[in-house]
Length: 424
Ligand code: HAM
Image (cartoon, rainbow, N blue to C red; front, side, top):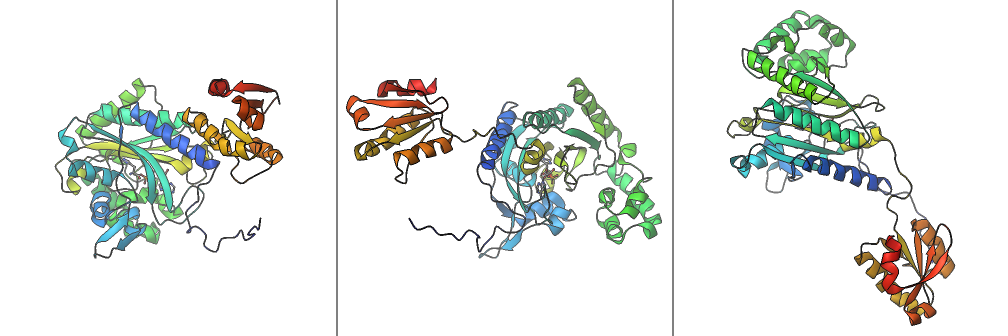
């Protein structure tokens, strides 16, 4: 057989994207499934929305002063002249779908879970990609503090089960009212204006557009200034304060440890009240495996009626990095491998494999015409526990020779008993 030895592709995957290949792809699929199972056990039903949306969904929902919308979106005009954007996050699309299909007229809260790819044109590095995957949940239609506690608990428990236990950073950023965040922002801007000369140039711009984000600055000068800046938690209105206290007690009731982080502001503009982040060790600078919070004003930004909500999203790529490789070497292996000797047996081999597969036994066989020796070698590579050997004698007696790949023991088994034997 002629083989083409060219191995370097002329077209690599685009910058910041990854090809997901076996064996890692098995683990990836397992963790995504574990997420949806964990979420389903708390009553969160699967949802998916299109990969692209009208750009407005993100401009109005996430906010155009956010970095994600302002700098990172893959936006294009389609042949009909519409501005569309590859989804950079899922909370705004999910809310759009809930409102559009009137799910909030049914049982409340609407509890939804997702797993899927997102797109942001960021500078790629370990744990930060241009196409990445999130798993997450959204609970829409209740402002009860118990929802906040439930959502956070589900996230923490999933991370634990996925082998990436995380620390919980918690804050409340109040709501947009002069008695609460709006009043606080005035104080913050005054504080920053007085120190404008000390701020890094990129942050001076933020003071006007999105002053809270100065807390996230990586600039040493700004970090210095922010050390003594007024904190939102000292300026919450009574309702937001009470809500936050209640969330904290509920978390304590559940035995969930948290670290209060009054400088945690989150990067998307829709957040109100509870804001949180899950951070894991071993990830370097991209240590946020997930984040979330309340978004009680999002429905209105999208043109709907007032409808509170809370949720989180976790980066699947980062969870897998944090969990490390737990590959036991057998993942993706088949249980049985059908080895055939002779033309007649080869013709019967696929039917035998099909019979085992239909009975739920993962089975592989030779598909490129190997010799018997080659097939035994391939059976070894496949990770199969059993080789099911079929030759002329076996065909005639309606039996197979079953070989334990580990011990090398062989015995004759009637075809009718085969499924039972290999399953044991
Ligand atoms: P986010 O903080 O923008 O929140 O993203 C959540 C998580 O997605 C991050 O903590 C990180 O693990 C992962 N992630 C974000 N960008 C990247 C990237 N470029 N490469 C790899 N992983 C990344 C949201 O997206 C909100 N929608 C979360 C939410 C749901 N809030 C309420 N409900």
